[in-house]
Image (cartoon, rainbow, N blue to C red; front, side):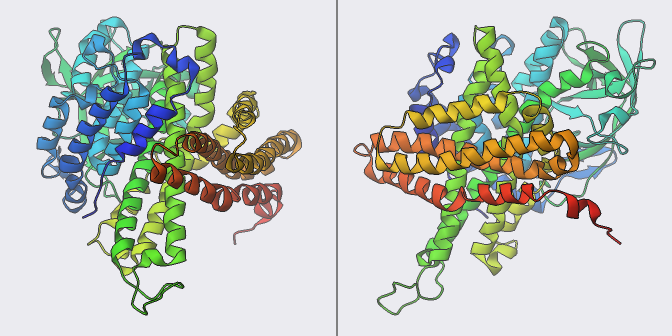
Length: 586
């Protein structure tokens, strides 16, 4: 089994030193969220994740969900852990106090999301979609529906799903066939089938609230005719109690590569009673409230699994003996951590993970501003930045999670390939993250065509980075980093201009370059994070010399060894698409 220790010191370093968004600090309701409170929350979260949830990762993999006679049963120990999970209030952490939530900001809940992803992604998925459903209902449902459904979702007694995909369509949701027929009482009866529904059925909660995309007969064609409906597994009585079984049935669960402790279901809706969320034929925009936040959380999944992979690789490298290092003086076999190439692998992991955690913390502040600031213009500006960075966090973090878990297997060698150590499970569990909630290639296309070519939010983000560089305090390390980062920003700006020009007459060049552009923006964004980390660390060296010197050294590694990948991606993209489109594939 793997080990996991929540990186509380790293998280508190960010909360104490990089909570530097002025607009965030103006939000009145978060002013009492101090370091002592956050530290206490993280300590309790760490205890829950390390002692109770993390052991379930292996259990769920070796004893997957079972589908029997139309019923889905969760792995051993999941019921007991989930009961404690909701009794301790973890599902309510970031929810509105009006519905029983604790009202914590994203700057706090994002840390918890990472811990939970590190401990067991399968277990996390039971509650994760519930929070997504909560957010969608909160922002788009009427007050009657909110009052009826949200308190139980916040409490964790009811869970949630989102039902989009059908066998004939995934990304192209305009092709969905599920129908919703309006009834005299204002409700709808839904008929159709949805696939790949995470936690679509299970035995952990007394009810499951499905958010379902469907078409009302007579509506516009394509995506313009999609509506969103709330469809409970069990009908809910007027007094809020669980009533009769609704027309929702589980046909099967998928046999998967990873996340085996989480059921991925095929659901059949047979005249299932549902309620319209938002306006008719406006369902896709309502569902995107859930999907966009979910995409960020998926990125955090990649970060969390990478953290576990790194911790185990580091521990193994300190114990495993193999060969003699170049500076060996006693002619005895050395631990592999003394070998330069192993140290390179570990530092690559460390520099990417810590940079990502910092970027996620920066983004969480922007999310809080976009949702809570009193000034509409400031909210809008933050929302645009969130929109720009969301596909980066979703795709870049999960791609790096794949790279890091693969590297962890390599460090473990043959033991990494076997099931005994649990390392290969990390790779398998993470492998879904670049796929679901919009594949990473779709995210890259969305970034380029909708976020870069059609507005100026990228230039705003670059201006923020340039302003940070200008304010560097004259220390040699920062001067070095500012020059290197400046070169990468130039590549990013030139890349964006190249895309604009190619989009006028050769769109295949643009399409084939989208993944490269997303990665360039990802590496530059992490460099921005490391620049900020270094600035703080240099100012605080006397407070904790070992901790802050390690930060500066890791930043050096990132700028010297990782950031140069920017140029390679830029050159690859500029080579164009001729060879790609001429290929015959006979």
